[in-house]
Length: 266
Length: 196
Image 1 (cartoon, rainbow over the protein chains, first blue to last red):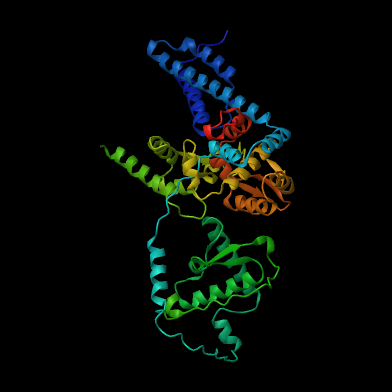
Image 2 (image 1 turned 135 degrees about the horizontal axis):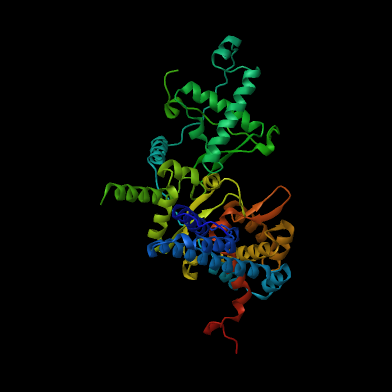
C-alpha cells in the first residue's frame, strides 16, 4: 500500500500540474506533451493528503487546468485533420474552380496583418535637415562642370602605415573584423544597415578607414551596396554566399566630405 | 496606485512602444530585446499588454524563429522568437483594398500557401509557378513570388524550394485558410453575382 503523501508534497505536485498546463496554454506548445492520464492518476493519489475542504481548491484548480489541456488537444487534432484533408490534388482542383476575387477572399479570411507605426526619429530628421541644407536653390544657374583635377602623388610606406593602411596580414585581419562587425550590426537591424550609420566614426580618419574597408568588401562580394533612389539612402547588406567573388558590374563613387561626415581634427 | 502597479503600467507602455513602433526593416522585436528592456519577467508584461490590446481587436503574436521549433531551452527559444502585434480578427475586404495589395497578389498568396500546406510546408518554385500560371500571366507569377519572399511570407532556399516564411506563421491562420478554400463556393453568392 502506498504511503499517504504529506500536505506540502501534495501542494507542490498539484502546483506543478497547474503550472505545466498554464505554460502549454499560454505559449501554444503541443498539448499532447502533457500526459493527462498520468497527471489525473497523480491527483487521485494526492486525495488522502487534502485534509481541510480549503485544500481542495488547489485540487480543483489542477483538475480545471487538465480539462483545459484536453480541450486544447481536441482543437489540435481538429486543426491537423483539417490540414491533412488538404491534399495537393484537392488544392489544385479548388484553385482551378475558384475565381481570382474568390481566392483573394480566401486569403483575407485567414489574414491577421501586422500592425506597426512608423515614426520619424530625431536622427532621421537631422539627416533630412543636412540633406536640405546641401540642396542648391533651383533658381541658380547650373554651374559649369569642372573637369576633375587628377593628382598623382607617391606616398611612402611609412605614411600609409601611419594611416593604418597596410597590405600585410593586418589588412586581412582588419577586413575580417570589419565584415564581422558589419554582419552583426546588419543582423540586429534586420538584414541591412545604412552605409553612413556604419561608416561614420568618431574621427574623420576612422571614417575614411571604415569607408576604405567597406569598398574592399563590396568589390570582393562580401557586401552588397544598394542605393534607394526614392530616399537617396545607401544600404549595406552582408552577402557571405558571394564572399571572395569580385563584383565587376559597376562601381559607385562615394565622396567623403569632412564638413558633412564630421569627426575630429585627426 | 502602488509603486508596483505603477512599474507594471510603465513597462506595459514601454512594451507597446517596442512592439508597435517599427525600428528595423522587419516588424516586431526579438525576445532578447524585450528582456533587455523590460526585465526578466517580460512575458508577464507582454501578457498584460495582450489583454489591453484585446479591447482594440489586436493581439501580441509570438513567432518562433523556425517553424515547429520544439524542445531545448525554452528561455533561449523565446529569446530568438519574434514578438509582434497583429489584428485579432480578419481584415474587412474594403480595408484590404486600401492596404496597397493587388487582388491578384492576394489570390496568388492564398493559392501558394494552401498548396504548401497540402505539401507538408514545402514545394519547388517551378511547381508553384506552374500552379499559379493557370490563374495569372507567367510574368506576374514570378514577380509575385519574389515579392512574397522579400516580404517574408515565403522562404526560398538555394535549391529553389519554397517553404512557409516567418510572416505567414505570424499573420496567416492556415487552418482558416484551408477551411475557407474548401467551403467558399458553398456560401451564397451576392445578389449582383447570382446567376439566372
